[in-house]
Picture 1 (cartoon, rainbow, N blue to C red):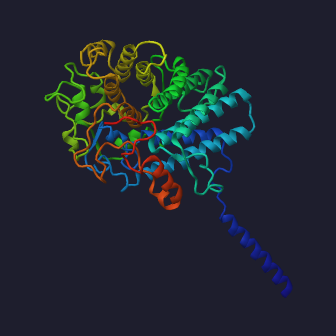
Picture 2: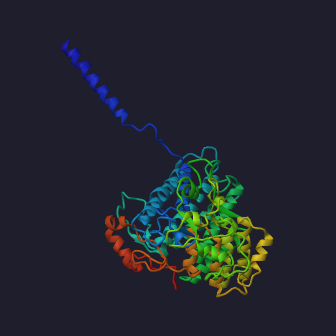
Picture 3: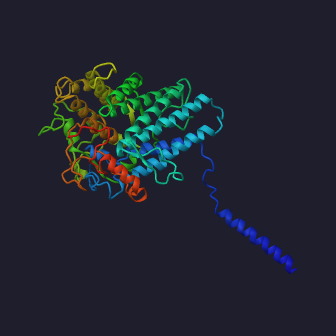
Length: 494
């Protein structure tokens, strides 16, 4: 009997251990995730990161002096360290965006076709690659030299080297060309419900091809001051295949959580009143006394009514880089903070400004700089809600008309692009750094010794502690880990 009891006890013990081990199993998470799901999640995270206005994530809208703070102004005064902005942004881009795009591509290459053609699978892989290029190019444009060839494989490369920014950028353009060549325009791309940018149809694939060419156009222009001959080749190849009037690539959001517009989350759902529109932007868009130092107009820009709210009968901008009263300053117009408001990644407006710039640089892209410039302004006004008649009236002013507007071509295009890229901080920042217009002045009381508007993000603090040797080499190579170190493509300055 004792032996029988002992045997029973042993069986109970093993059974109990087995039950306890079962408790350690995660039965709620997916055991297998599809490639299209990984793509969709990474894309949402990427665009949320790029469109965010949170002081913890992305301060480009305040650096570009479109928005001013009401309470927490340190980040608009160029403090990147206290809240760890570079580290947060960098970590999200590598860990939640690029790693998931890499895994999405791996899964799509290996999982069964499940009722779709190889051509559609190739389109899906190309879409993942296009968005990967967007994410990588964003990081290069922010930091300069970054981990690239040894990135995304922590087991093999726990301390990755930093690759040369120009070399990365050119490789990304090569990857973009390969992705475009891989796509079949008569075949759909992502399945329905997994692409919140373009339709899951052949027409949607055509839009992806146009976006890829628009991105190539932008990247080519970004290199124009660094490698003119190479940039000319890239720009001239892309130009015939970009957006036409009314076309865009935008992230489409839902009215319901958790897939709402990030700017709705920042401005409304947060329950915070942290931002107002700056006097710099408002003064440049309407007749003011004294006149704006950026753009003096006698006819108000019709977009102002869609950008900002009035205080009674007037617009009153906040002081950039300072604290402001929320109730005594113009707010971001609520049309921009709807939960399902789209967020523009690239559009016809941007490509027309880029083509105007290309013409002025002597690149063979067709048309005149004046025509492309005028197309961009008119399209921007109509997109925001203005009429063609309002656009014509605004553009007829000598200070806006291309042939009579003040300054050189960089000033004419730069000033108007700055106005058009409202709430698109990275796009505005890229344009400003490349053209050096408008002449944005630093905040009255800058922090951390940054005496001008930043031209790059500092490297994340974690790189100094976890990847110190490679960090030090990279910082030395680019000319110092400073917010005022101009990157390889940013050769001018003022």
